[in-house]
Image (tube, rainbow, N blue to C red; front, side, top):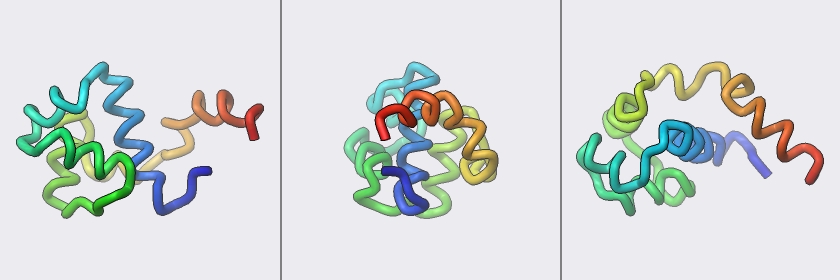
Length: 85
């Protein structure tokens, strides 16, 4: 179940997949390892502000975008997940 703690990782993973980027492709764009991005997406590590800025930029967003309008970005996921709850 999504909560505030793991929403950022879920959002990053969703945006990456919507952009059609693999972990490796995004890692090359932002200059960090694919395993690090995976750990961020799975809430194993908390990225620094500068790293989060790089990840957002690599996905075509700003860091502010990552924290705004969360429900709009996840609307299609909520419709998909709700019947399973």
